[in-house]
Image 1 (cartoon, helix red, strand yellow):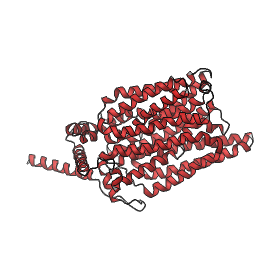
Image 2 (cartoon, one colour):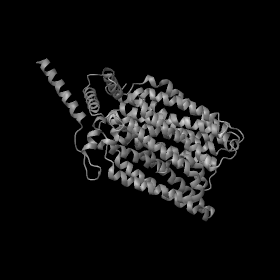
Image 3 (spheres, helix red, strand yellow):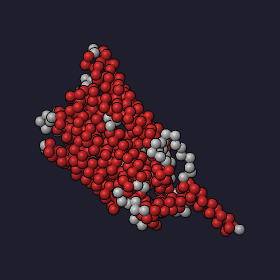
Image 4 (cartoon, one colour):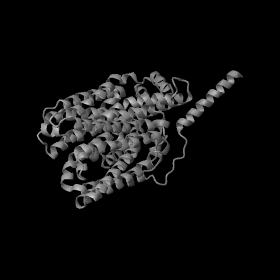
Length: 501
């Protein structure tokens, strides 16, 4: 099997954890809007619905914290198992819920498991990936989030259409389906290799070398790239140990580390403030603003998720060619444009006749699909790609964990305030996302350097040798890994020449 194919298969399987996150994001809006749910839980108020949504991301906040503290001890694979098993428990509790308190508990526990998975999976993918396909591999996180959300949308659409409003299967079946991929992930992840960087950090050097060879050279431990990569990882970890980089405090004390932490926090907060979570959680409520009922809203949202998958596939195919920085900037501007149209349509819709309303509905749908494509190709994917690649081995788990904490904190806030905000402010609420998308674009233009093709062990160099303000700076150096590989190849050629002589 080709090494790139092997890496891709590992990345695809690990992304089942990302699928769970997307599924739970997509399923809850349809579940809580179903007639059976409303009847069973006695027509819950907007703030109670908000709590059902936001307590999941509240649990995920603590899950990301747990993962950051445990993965350096347990390893990447065992941390994935922990997250998947916790998610199974939460999924079972949600499916069997008899009252809102019961449901809150299941949502919180499932969120805890998802927080662990969402933090660890892109980190694991980045650590097994060759630099030339690292963006493609870590971009699978957002692709599988999209696949999960799409599956959820059509599952809830199907149960809403085919089960009577008096049958709790309308919402129990969609909530129960998510347990299956979680169980598969927990059962089979140990069949795949541990992160070679984690192995090296725990002094399992021989195993790390053989893992690198299997990942990047079809098992050839004498391959010049593998030997160069092994030596570079070993030297980087030794340097980190000698300079105390294993401390969480290093993220705040070291200027280059702190710069990366600020970027990751801004990236994750900015992603949530694009407005994507408001759309995912409350699609039926948003579609009501333009006269669409719950069943039809779920169908339209399913189409929207398909556009999102198209964007995510584009990321996987092209991100290692086009880079990270400019797609992120342009993606935020596209999202801002979409919300301008959305707000305008919702504002005008009640004041025009049926013919114009029909045209406005299609305008609303098209720009919603444009948003989903643009977000998924850029902001959504890159908020997982960039944090997983810019930290060094010793601080990576802490840095990615803190980024996830910020993401889930903002996600929880959006989940809690969106339903009441739509009730009270209507179209004006969506102007918030226009402003945030524009400020995101300006921030990333000013402060985010390009990381395409930079080996993980050379990110320290990149962030130490460039200033905070990025425009006008150029990166023209050859990577140290490429230089080391060339030196090893030259030594090997010289040795062969001497043997022949």
